[in-house]
Length: 241
Image 1 (cartoon, rainbow, N blue to C red):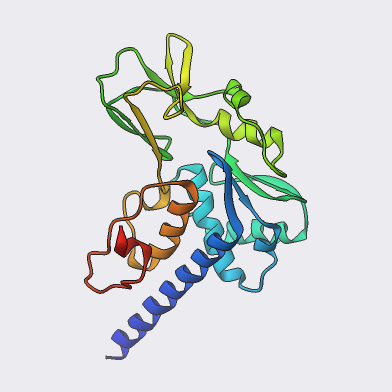
Image 2 (image 1 turned 120 degrees about the vertical axis):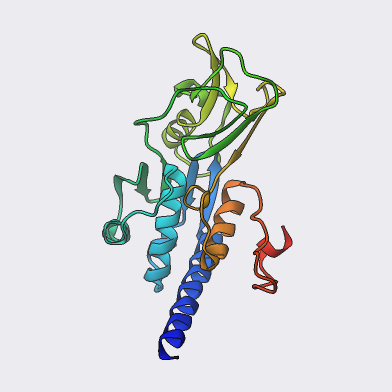
């Protein structure tokens, strides 16, 4: 009985951590452009560093397109540096660029895949791309530097970071010609692209439902499916999906 009680307490504490992390994501994170996440400077200066580090690990994995969270000790060390001022570092395939105007996250430019287009694909762990027609001679690859030309920076978003983030977004290519950003206004009508919450694409523990839903809302990913457990937090967004 004691072991069961301890397990229940641990589960409750883990779920509470997820709830606090979700609240921080909702309060301090925004997406100025596809592939670019901005965190308010206050994200790193709050009292609940445990929840902030957990939220940071989830965001790093999502932006980097990886299915596992970065090591907690390494993430905490980077997080502590964020408190002290500006920096630029890379962790979990994600560039962390902390400036006076905010903490910006975007996919690093290394090891971005170029793969033959398929009817359904999870590109770079970050984007689900669907082609209703059978692709012929198409390749899904990074959009490259020219992708940012039709985007105008808003507010305090540095133009250089906008360009880097959009350059790492997927595009359809044929014979060396970029058709457009996959899912963009000028993309082929048969193309659809939706973001993926990378660390939870294969497995979503119940105690991570809230932070996963918060990240999905942040990046424009589809709503999460309802919990299979009847009555599990019926007020949560996932219960209404």
